[in-house]
Image (tube, rainbow, N blue to C red; front, side, top):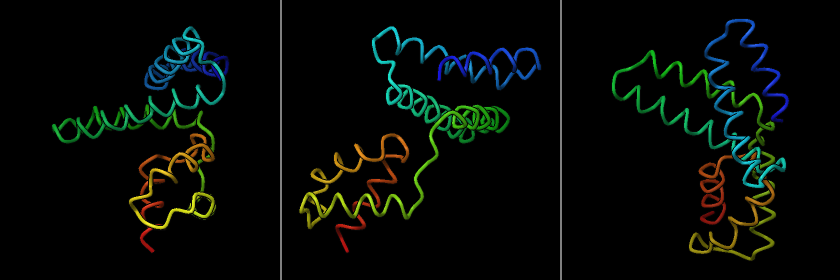
Length: 144
């Protein structure tokens, strides 16, 4: 994935696409840091990119709250660039099936037992679903 991002950075530089280049440079830098720390498998790379995308979205939200719409829009575009390198997110149906299986496997029956279900689900979704989305669905299944 790092090599793809480096190649795309070069293309963005030649095309003069500054926003895309900035997003790709940040992603490349973070992936290189992870590799130096010994976390260079695909799952680790996905986690790094997820974290970077989430940071861009949070920055956009903070800038929008501060009245900096131009900076917020820029951060959102950077988040979209990074999201392009992430695996396809799970659909609601796919995620619902995984959550249903995990609830059955763990034997959980109330929201108080979310701690039994969440690790099972998160291991299966492997970066293809946001933790908040998973948590909400698990809570919904356990309260039904």
